[in-house]
Every structure is written in structure tokens, then in C-alpha cells.
Amino acid sequence: MSSASLLPPADAQPPVRHPDAPAPGEPLGAHYEHCFGCGPGQPHGLHLEARAGDGVSLTAEFTVQPAHQGAPGLAHGGVLATALDETLGSLNWLLRTIAVTGRLETDFVAPVPVGTVLHLEAEVTAVAGRKIYSRATGRIGGPEGPVAVRAEALFIEVKVDHFTEHGREQEIRAAMSDPDQIRRSRAFEVNP
Ligand SMILES: CCCCCCCCCC(=O)SCCNC(=O)CCNC(=O)[C@H](O)C(C)(C)COP(=O)(O)OP(=O)(O)OC[C@H]1O[C@@H](n2cnc3c(N)ncnc32)[C@H](O)[C@@H]1OP(=O)(O)O
Image (cartoon, rainbow, N blue to C red; front, side):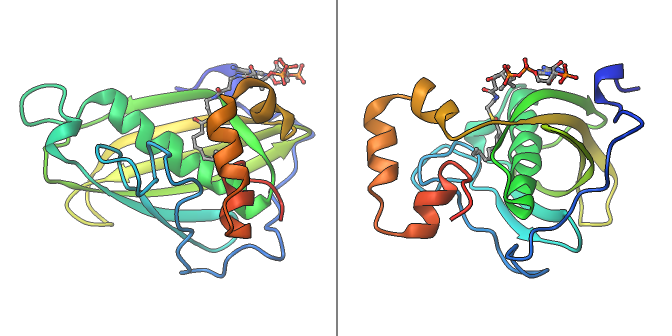
């Protein structure tokens, strides 16, 4: 059961897919080279690969590597929460809203062995002012397999200053000087 702060208020609106959002089926790619969730430049990262779905939804896959263990041979719960957080965070690109995780509630339903592909799906359920409500599931044994993890989240819209004020200067400068305009924008999930 989710906590009260994850229940959209009565005046919440359905999410609106941005007209420039990637078409259903299109890969989202990494939003930042060094992101632990999706960046190709993180040797022990999750290398999560997401694809746009219909509406404000997406699917993603992540293969549990030996570096992601908690108990012997099993994925660490925090790593699974990261996979959910990354998948849910990627939804904001479909809204073209810059937002960060405020709250993430996770149910660990079944253990996830090393070598397993976690099939994730996520959707935004409602938006109320700066608050974005979303949920995700992760299945094993195939996209229709049993649910292993589940999450509900509240993302809060922020200004790009959130990153420039709080982030470390050297990484911010490097991300902002990326010659790829889309990647430069997506490092902070900013509308290009
Ligand atoms: C962007 C590129 C990334 C793309 C993909 C990445 C995927 C991964 C995503 C992440 O992991 S993001 C990193 C983890 N998250 C953070 O580091 C966020 C740290 N927290 C903050 O910076 C601030 O707490 C936050 C911006 C979330 C909120 O601070 P604010 O000062 O902007 O908002 P405020 O505290 O006024 O709250 C605004 C509303 O949200 C509500 N709220 C804020 N935090 C909440 C919370 N934790 N739980 C429930 N409600 C919350 C708050 O009650 C309030 O509700 P009302 O408008 O109804 O009064």
C-alpha cells in the first residue's frame, strides 16, 4: 500500500505527452554518459535501455551483472530500486519536464538472480502542478513474466538551476560542452 503523499490530489490532471516526444518503440538512449542507471561510460552501471511507449509510458530492460549482487548470486535491492528510479525518471523526457525523484516506494516481490533480464514498464499516472505521479513494474522471465519489483514515485519539477547550483562544476561544464545538442539538453532533461 502506498503512502498518502503518493496519491494524486483530486485536482490532478492526466499527463500530456509532449508533441516532440520520441515515437512509440523509439529508443530513448542515455540521457548522460556517466549516469549510473543508463550511461554507457559507467563500467558497473546498469546500462538500462528504455524505449518510448504509448501515451506517457515506456519500457526498459536491464540485465543484472555480477557487479550488482547483494546476497550471493542475487541482485542488490538498492540496484533494483535504481533500475526503477531510472525508468521512472526517463518518463519525464516524454513530458519534457525537468524533474527529480522526491519519493520512491518499492515493493520487492521476488528475488532477481544475476544474469536475469529485468523487463520494466512505467507510466505517469497524473500531474498536479510541479508534482508528477508515476508507477513501474519489473518482471523476470520475459516481458509477461512474474512481477519481481514494483514502485510508485513522486517526481518534483525543478528548474535547470537545481543541477547547476548543486552539481559539481567539472561534470556540469563537461556535460554542457557536449557537441551533441540533444545529449547536452538531456543530461539535465531540458527541453532543447
Ligand atoms: C534530470 C535528469 C535525470 C533523468 C533520469 C534520472 C533518473 C533518476 C532520477 C533521480 O534519481 S533524481 C536524484 C534523486 N533526487 C534528488 O536528488 C532530489 C533531492 N531533493 C530535492 O532536491 C528537493 O527536496 C526537491 C526538489 C525534490 C523538492 O524541493 P523543493 O524545495 O523544490 O520543493 P518543496 O519542498 O517546496 O515541495 C514541493 C511540493 O512537493 C512535495 N514534496 C517534496 N518532496 C516530497 C517528498 N519527498 N515526498 C512527498 N512530497 C514531497 C511538497 O510537500 C510540496 O507539496 P505542496 O506543493 O503540496 O506543498
